Structure formats: C-alpha cells, structure tokens
Image 1 (cartoon, one colour):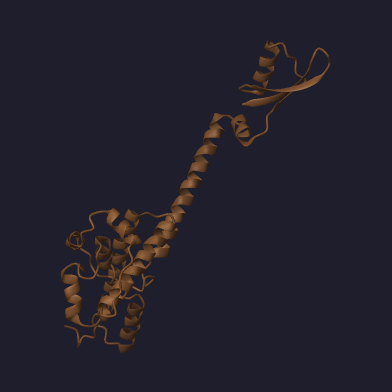
Image 2 (cartoon, rainbow, N blue to C red):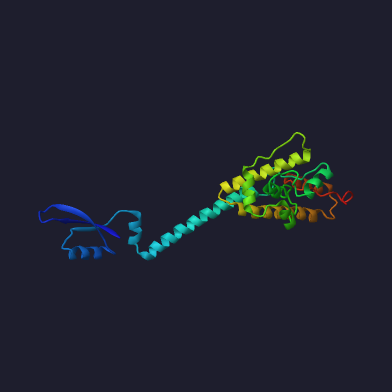
Length: 248
C-alpha cells in the first residue's frame, strides 16, 4: 500500500512524500529508520489502495465478487440473445410450406441444393419450418460440417428470381430471416455454435408444443376447441391437426 507522509526539513520547511508499506505503523517504522520523523502518515488516495488497506482477504472477496458480477452480466446477455432470437414463433416468418407437394418434395429430396448455393443456407433451410425434425443425415446432406459454413453464408445475398415457384420464394425469405436471427443473436453476445444449439432446441420445443396439442385433441369432439388449438398452432407457424374424419 502507499502512504502519504508529511515532515519538516532541518530548515523547518514542510514537505510531503510517498512510502510503500504494509500498514500505517510499518510506514512510520520505515520512515524513522530512514531518519525521517513524520508529523503525519495517511493512506494515499485511490480505489485499489483503499481495497488493499482492508487486507488481502477483503481484496480477494472484492475481486471474486466483481468476477461473479461480470459472469452474471455475461450470462444475462446470452440469455437475452437466446430469448430474443430463438423463441417459438415466426420472428423470421417461419411457417409451413404449402403448395405443390412435388415442388416441396423436390427441394427436400436433394437437401435444397437446387435452391441454395451455400452449405450454410442449405443447413438453415432444414429449420425453416417450425417443429419439423432435423436429423444427422439432413445436416450431412447440407454439406455444413461446422460453424464456419454458417458464418460464411451471412455475407452472401440470396438471389430471388421472378421465375421461382412460390414455394421456393417463401423458403428463401424464411432462410433470409433466420440469417437475420443469427446476426441479432451474435450481436447480443452469442456465437455461431450457440446459435446452432439453440436452433435444435427451438425445433424440439416447437415439436413438443405440437404433440401436446395433438394429445389434447385426440378423442375430443369439441369443434370449438379444435379451432382454438389449431389457431394457436398457426400463430406459431406450426402445422395444424386435421380433424379425425379427414386425417390420414
């Protein structure tokens, strides 16, 4: 610690100095050993100096507390980023693709290779429709082997063509939206690997919501309940549950 001391010279002139010592008494002793008889010895100003004066035990407590607060702030930023970007719903206007079954099947059968040029975009396409299961073979087929492929697609501009079928245009719009989610997620303190984990978690959460509604409606003939539950599924971009007479 540093201490400020005042003393008089042999000419009776007041002067001040600074001495390093472990305590105020140690500072007095050190000065007297050097032939200086101070009329004051005070702790030097400064936050760190004040903390050190409390002793190493208190210094360690302060440091650990500051580290804990820093970690808590970081965790809150991560939680906020995840909640902002990956809550169930259509932040990225994610929804089921309806239209020509042959067009949709053709897109999915070759892992969207005819729609997107980059592996990262093909990977995101598997997460475009809420609640759909994404398997390991799907990911391998997309060609996106690690987070770098996803990062690389962020700077790419997806090309739209007036000749694209509506189903393809919608898919491109959804993938663009998920890329915006990724930018927001990373801007909020997250990273690409964390975003990938959150994509899977969101997909599973949406599937859980769908299955919960499916189980609730199973064997229930109330048409109003069916309409209410299907409306809630549509609002989340999930597929709806067909009435028993039309379900295959």
